[in-house]
Amino acid sequence: MATLNLDQLAGWDALLSDEEQQVQRTVRAFVRASVMPRIAADFEAGHFARDLIPELAALGLLGANLTGYGCAGMGSVAWGVACHELEAGDSGLRSFVSVQTSLAMYAIWRFGSEAQKQRWLPAMAAGRAVGCFGLTEPDHGSDPGSMETRARRDGSDWILNGRKQWITNAQIADVAVVWSQCSHNADGIAGFLVEKGRPGFSATDIPRKLSMRASVTGGLFLDDVRVPEEARLPGAAGLRAPLACLDAARFGVAFGVVGAARFCLESAIDYTQGRKQFGVPLAQKQLVQAELADLAGGVVKASVLAVHFGRLKDAGKLHAAQTSLLKRENCRMALDTARRTRALLGANGVSGDYHVLRHALNLESTSTYEGTDFIHALTVGRALTGLSAF
Image: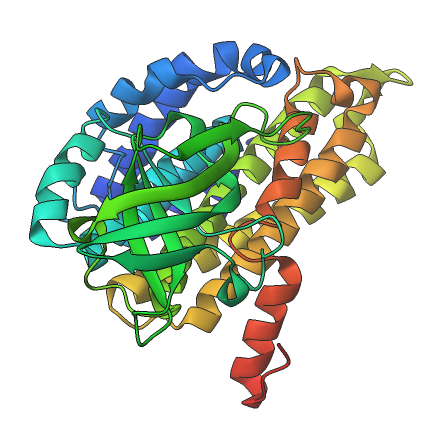
């Protein structure tokens, strides 16, 4: 009997252009050849595969959806498909690319001076420089407007003091985009490019991390860090600037988590077809087929919605509330899929060799960063009612 794989069930061929399908094939092949043979060991060891950065750069994935300065200039759907395939390998890999692209590079590309763009963007696109995005603080996650990091003017320089936490790429970054309260800025918040090696600037590990273990995640400490005026992002005024970066990043997250869900479901399909119980494959049992069909519906709906919203994004018609809806719904679906497919694999579902629980652990984090489930619910609710419940 003829079968359909998940790509066919979602109708990817009809949804994606030839260029987008080529991106999908290329990134999928990279993940299968360079990521999957090592990811279980990297996750267990808490190791980020930094040696893969040149390959990611060679594929045009760093700054992929930005234009100029050595960036690939991909459309939103092509970028989303790339994130989808990267996260089918591991959320930590996609997170590295997302932070480099949608947070650090995007902040410089949109809000930086021409000199800042020329200095950093070509090097970051080529993988010669790594960036991070310092917004979240130990006591201020969902409420970044209450950040305690401060910038004060000292002659022609700025003095930064504060602490950032849960910062992807922190320990390996050559430059950090640091957001700070700033009394000299009428809008209250300013962004600064803080280079590695500045006196008083350091990065630390986060110990005993049980999710995103194959990702570099740390804290940033700023103790009287002196930077010149040329380090300030001149186009960034107020909280809207870092929030615009987060909105750009959420789109990649929303597309990426569907890739993790797809991988988990494909694993469950393969496993239940090969595992025999009571004389027949598990996949021949009605309860198992019902579970697979239910999960497939979620993956397909999330895939189609992501492409639709990607088309709106390219047309300049995507509302921030739609991005919040997409991120919230796709993260919910992906985490639910990972948990339920783990159950379909029985005891083997907790083995690193099958990868499903690794995805489930990572997806616990994706549901939290770039806006929690609750925060996005309030964003959508405000759009529907016109009333803010924050």
